[in-house]
Structures are given as C-alpha cells and as structure tokens.
Length: 266
Image (cartoon, rainbow, N blue to C red; front, side):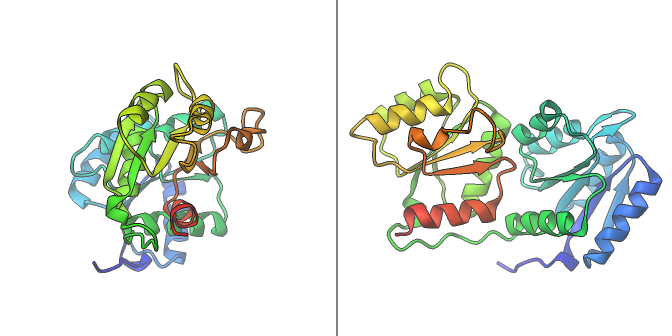
C-alpha cells in the first residue's frame, strides 16, 4: 500500500474565525500541506467532509451551531468516515472538556496558539495512523495475537480497535469494564490486555491487580490507556499494580507500536 506524504494530505479545517483560518492554513502550508478545504460552522463542516473525503480533519472546539465534539462523534459513528483522524485545536484547558474528546477518539490535541513543534508532532502522529504498516514480531504472527480491550467508552474502544487493526491485530475481544473483562478472561486465552483506568464497577487498577494475582493470567502484558496525567494522584503508584506500560489518550500509533514490540517482540 502506497504511503501518503504530508504534501498529499487532503485536510478539512473547521474554524469559526476567518483570521484563525488564515493563520492555521499558513502554518499548514509551512508544513508543505497545500490541500486544505475550510468550514466555519458544524453544519458547513459536515457538508465539506462529505464532499471532500479528507485524510485528516483539523477542528476548533466551539462554534455558533455546536462544538467540535459534534463533528467528531458524527465521523466516528459513520461507516465511511470513522477512520479519518481528527485533530482538535483549542485554547480550552479544562480537563473535563478535553476528556470528552479523548474518550471519543481524537487523534491529537493542539493548544491554541500552537508552536511549529506542536503542529509537526500532531501531523506526524496523524500521518502514522493513516500510513500504518502491519507490525512485525519475532515471536508472534501478528494476526494471531489475542487482544482483550477494556474501556467503558464505545467510541474509545472503536478508536483503539481501529489503531490496533491497522497494525494487523484483528483478534480483539472487548469489555465495557473490569467485571466484564474478568468473565472473558475465564472463558478465553489472551496474549495482551489493553485497559482504560476510569471505569464503573471495576476500574483498570482493580482489573490489573486481579490479573496479576491469578496464576493463570499473571504472565499477561497489560497496557493501561488513560487520559489521566502520569503525575496525578491516581497514577502515582499505578505501576505497583503490575501494569507493563502506561499509554496516554490520545492513543498514538507510534507510541503503541513501540510498546507492542517491547512486550511481544522478545
């Protein structure tokens, strides 16, 4: 499969301010991106996305007729657009507002104003997702790797599952929380577990402890996927539960690829 370059990307930029649209477009041009369609409202964005079939959507958070979350949820629930990476550009810094985007499967979050380094990293992450190659492992056929994916957000599970499948991991069973995951662990054999931290009934910390204390599952690699800061009180001692790696939301394919090679490739 041919790899896209930055210069070949078709981007839809959704931004209510004409001045901001010009600024961001110029910054994209500086990154060699020339194919940019623009929209100023949620309604316009839906139309432009349908017509343009973009490779990447770059969106602000707030509009007169809704929010970027409305756009993100619409594409993630679409059978044809669900795989299109969505990049949020916003000055919003309230954790609860950004959390909604992280749980819905945003590919990258850029502060406004952003630096050239911020933009380059976000574009590289999005391009890696678009150009994903199958993972090559020494000890496993990647198609046979059995994955347990645990997250209470369906949109988050869909996004993580798409990222894993883009690397060749198609054998995935899903659970909405730790309690459901334990049932699956009793009935199935897995090679690796991806679990969210914050979940009802049984959270990721409790699930990880159950996996480690059960002799039949104690060997399983566990990757915890969370939007919590690694310096937060909740995360301070999380490695003591026996997790092997901590992965941030947004779920970046380059980071996940390295973790999988480290955990399954030796």
